[in-house]
Image (cartoon, rainbow, N blue to C red):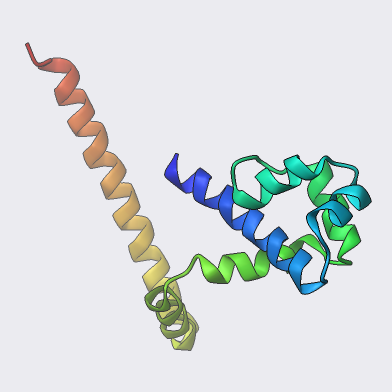
Length: 128
Protein backbone atom coordinates (compact mmCIF):
# COMPACT_ATOMS: atom_id res chain seq x y z
CA UNK A 1 0.00 0.00 0.00
CA UNK A 2 2.74 2.49 0.94
CA UNK A 3 4.53 1.70 -2.32
CA UNK A 4 1.40 2.60 -4.35
CA UNK A 5 1.09 5.90 -2.52
CA UNK A 6 4.75 6.64 -3.23
CA UNK A 7 4.24 5.87 -6.93
CA UNK A 8 1.28 8.26 -7.11
CA UNK A 9 3.41 10.93 -5.42
CA UNK A 10 6.30 10.32 -7.85
CA UNK A 11 3.99 10.71 -10.85
CA UNK A 12 2.57 13.91 -9.37
CA UNK A 13 5.96 15.42 -8.60
CA UNK A 14 7.15 14.58 -12.13
CA UNK A 15 4.13 16.38 -13.59
CA UNK A 16 4.82 19.40 -11.37
CA UNK A 17 8.48 19.41 -12.41
CA UNK A 18 7.58 19.29 -16.11
CA UNK A 19 5.01 22.05 -15.70
CA UNK A 20 7.43 24.31 -13.84
CA UNK A 21 10.27 23.58 -16.28
CA UNK A 22 7.99 24.89 -19.06
CA UNK A 23 6.96 27.86 -16.92
CA UNK A 24 3.26 26.97 -16.96
CA UNK A 25 0.82 27.70 -14.16
CA UNK A 26 -1.51 25.00 -12.93
CA UNK A 27 -4.38 26.90 -14.54
CA UNK A 28 -2.63 26.98 -17.92
CA UNK A 29 -1.81 23.27 -17.92
CA UNK A 30 -5.22 22.31 -16.56
CA UNK A 31 -6.94 24.26 -19.36
CA UNK A 32 -4.71 22.69 -22.01
CA UNK A 33 -5.42 19.12 -20.87
CA UNK A 34 -9.07 19.67 -19.97
CA UNK A 35 -9.09 19.15 -16.20
CA UNK A 36 -9.94 21.40 -13.28
CA UNK A 37 -7.03 23.28 -11.71
CA UNK A 38 -7.95 21.82 -8.32
CA UNK A 39 -7.73 18.28 -9.74
CA UNK A 40 -4.32 19.02 -11.26
CA UNK A 41 -3.18 20.39 -7.91
CA UNK A 42 -4.26 17.20 -6.18
CA UNK A 43 -2.52 15.08 -8.86
CA UNK A 44 0.72 16.99 -8.38
CA UNK A 45 0.53 16.53 -4.61
CA UNK A 46 -0.02 12.78 -5.02
CA UNK A 47 -3.47 12.98 -3.44
CA UNK A 48 -5.24 11.98 -6.64
CA UNK A 49 -4.31 9.32 -9.16
CA UNK A 50 -3.68 10.43 -12.71
CA UNK A 51 -5.82 8.54 -15.21
CA UNK A 52 -4.11 7.14 -18.28
CA UNK A 53 -6.19 9.45 -20.45
CA UNK A 54 -4.98 12.49 -18.50
CA UNK A 55 -1.39 11.21 -18.43
CA UNK A 56 -1.40 10.82 -22.22
CA UNK A 57 -2.74 14.37 -22.59
CA UNK A 58 0.07 15.62 -20.34
CA UNK A 59 2.66 13.66 -22.30
CA UNK A 60 1.32 15.08 -25.57
CA UNK A 61 1.39 18.61 -24.13
CA UNK A 62 5.04 18.19 -23.15
CA UNK A 63 5.91 16.19 -26.29
CA UNK A 64 7.16 13.24 -24.23
CA UNK A 65 6.88 9.51 -24.69
CA UNK A 66 5.73 7.37 -21.80
CA UNK A 67 9.18 5.78 -21.58
CA UNK A 68 10.84 9.17 -21.21
CA UNK A 69 8.37 10.16 -18.50
CA UNK A 70 8.93 7.04 -16.39
CA UNK A 71 12.67 6.66 -17.06
CA UNK A 72 13.62 9.44 -14.65
CA UNK A 73 11.19 8.10 -12.07
CA UNK A 74 12.68 4.62 -12.33
CA UNK A 75 16.15 6.03 -11.72
CA UNK A 76 14.87 7.93 -8.69
CA UNK A 77 13.44 4.77 -7.14
CA UNK A 78 16.79 2.91 -7.18
CA UNK A 79 19.31 3.44 -4.42
CA UNK A 80 22.99 3.93 -5.29
CA UNK A 81 23.60 0.39 -3.97
CA UNK A 82 20.95 -0.97 -6.38
CA UNK A 83 22.59 0.80 -9.29
CA UNK A 84 26.03 -0.49 -8.29
CA UNK A 85 24.68 -4.04 -8.04
CA UNK A 86 23.33 -3.84 -11.59
CA UNK A 87 26.62 -2.40 -12.84
CA UNK A 88 28.55 -5.20 -11.14
CA UNK A 89 26.20 -7.81 -12.59
CA UNK A 90 26.49 -6.38 -16.11
CA UNK A 91 30.29 -6.32 -15.89
CA UNK A 92 30.38 -10.09 -15.43
CA UNK A 93 30.77 -12.54 -18.31
CA UNK A 94 27.51 -14.00 -19.69
CA UNK A 95 28.14 -17.41 -18.07
CA UNK A 96 28.53 -15.83 -14.65
CA UNK A 97 25.37 -13.76 -15.16
CA UNK A 98 23.42 -16.94 -16.01
CA UNK A 99 24.80 -18.63 -12.89
CA UNK A 100 23.63 -15.73 -10.73
CA UNK A 101 20.19 -15.74 -12.39
CA UNK A 102 19.89 -19.48 -11.71
CA UNK A 103 20.91 -18.95 -8.08
CA UNK A 104 18.28 -16.21 -7.67
CA UNK A 105 15.69 -18.57 -9.18
CA UNK A 106 16.75 -21.28 -6.74
CA UNK A 107 16.49 -18.90 -3.77
CA UNK A 108 13.04 -17.68 -4.84
CA UNK A 109 11.78 -21.26 -5.24
CA UNK A 110 13.21 -22.19 -1.85
CA UNK A 111 11.60 -19.13 -0.28
CA UNK A 112 8.19 -20.04 -1.74
CA UNK A 113 8.54 -23.62 -0.54
CA UNK A 114 9.43 -22.46 2.96
CA UNK A 115 6.41 -20.14 3.01
CA UNK A 116 4.14 -22.96 1.82
CA UNK A 117 5.44 -25.28 4.55
CA UNK A 118 4.85 -22.59 7.18
CA UNK A 119 1.34 -22.02 5.84
CA UNK A 120 0.55 -25.74 5.99
CA UNK A 121 1.85 -25.94 9.57
CA UNK A 122 -0.24 -22.89 10.56
CA UNK A 123 -3.37 -24.49 9.09
CA UNK A 124 -2.69 -27.82 10.82
CA UNK A 125 -1.98 -26.19 14.19
CA UNK A 126 -4.16 -23.07 14.45
CA UNK A 127 -3.46 -20.85 17.47
CA UNK A 128 -6.10 -21.12 20.17
